[in-house]
Every structure is written in structure tokens, then in C-alpha cells.
Image (cartoon, rainbow, N blue to C red; front, side, top):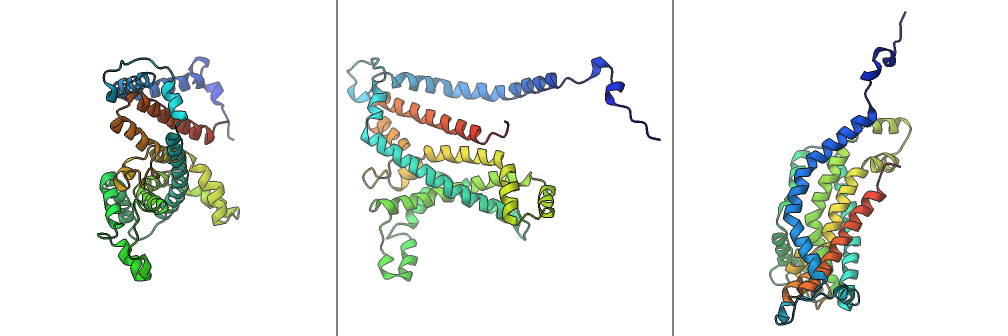
Length: 313
């Protein structure tokens, strides 16, 4: 005969674990663990952020060194929001971000699903896909720029073997669409592996028992992917989207190396326009306003992703 004795009768009243107290203790421990990193980041970034915010409300242009550093209120922000050049750069940045995110996430997810399967040489393939991400951006941009050069590169040589009229295409600083195409290729080549590794880490923590249960219930491969994989991949997907979106919004080095914002200003993004305002125009007030808006945009994007993909009710 089996006798069932509840934990409530065995444990004295004062020894029962308090769920609320345990959660509060874990929360305090979490804060204590991240506090050193937060303090270090604030020590490094607090002054530049505050100084930049201060400059954004002042006239501070080194080209007019004799003029006073005076408070101008929201004049720099008004100038920015009414500037056709800034609006055009914003439109190009948003378009680049949307297209890049869609292409990169889809490609990286397919790559991660492939790498999550068992096949001969999987370890070598997993290690090799990190090579593009490990290459410095300046080096990879110069590499792609050289490959698409009509005189020194080999892309036109191979295209010429397909059709003679394709043997001398000028890819950069001649056609807006061809310039953007090369920028997309160079930027995605470097960043897709990074996103794929994040998604692969998310796939590996999904237990196989979940897929076995789905197969028993008669789910097809696509149904299992849509109903099981994607929902359980949300945490990794949020991290990948945040990182990749912020990289796309703040893209600068690839464009600076490959096109310099050309032809004309047709590949000029917000970060490139901000760089031009700071370095070429030496307008630290106007440049500070652009930087503040970029930071706010990044925070809105990150918060939006977290809120949209939040699993708690």
C-alpha cells in the first residue's frame, strides 16, 4: 500500500520557499552581475554622449572660429529635419536597412538550418563561415571593390565570357543601382555569417523531442518549421535582428571605402552624412544633432523589437 504524504505536511510553515522572495533575490543578483559592465560603459561613453547632446543645442562650427559658442535651442534639429540632403539620406538608410534585413535574415536562417543538420565535415563548414565576419570591414570592402573594378577585377572577365557587352561594366560611381548592388553584396557577405551563428545557437537549444512530437502528430516539415522552430527561435531571432538592424542603420565604412557616397550623393547614408558634417564641414552643433537622432532611432528599433517579440503576456 502506497502512502502519499504531501510536501505541505512535511515542511514546517516557516521553511516553505517563498517564490516572491526567490525571484527578488535572483533579480538583485542579476543587477549585481551586470553592474560592473554598465559602470564601465558609462565611464567610457557618458562624457561623449553628454558633450554631443550639449553641442546639438549650440552653435559650434570650427569654420567660424571667431563666432561665439552660443545656445541656439532646437535650431540644429530644425535645420536637420528641413534639410533635403538629410531627408534623402534618411530615405536611403531606411531602404537599405529594410532590404538588407530581409535578405540577410532569410539567407542566415537557411544557412543556420543547414548547419544544424548532421553531415560530413559539418565542423569545418561551421568554422569556415566565420571567416568573412572575422575579416575587417575595410579589408573586405577593398576586396570587393577590387573584384568589381573593370580593369583589375575578375567579375567583368567572367561576365564577358557569358556576354561580350558585359565585359566592361563600371559597377561603382557610374550607376546608382549597380553601386547599391555591390554595396549589398559586400555588406551581406560579411554579416550573414554572424547572423547565422546567432540563429544556429538558438536552433541547438531546441530539444529534439519537440520535433518528434510534431512528427507523431502528423506535422509536415514546413509545419514543424513554422509552428515549432520559429516560435522557439524568437529569443535568438530578436538578438540577430537588433544587431543586424543597428549595423544597417549605422552603415558607414563599406560605403566610405567602395563609393565615397557617390555617384554624387546617391549612396550617402545618415552615418556618412554625419561624418561629412563633422569632418568636412566641422559643424559640431549640426553633427551633434544628427548623432542624437541616430542614437534615438537605434533605441527605438531595439525597444520595438523587444516589445514585438516579447513572449510574456
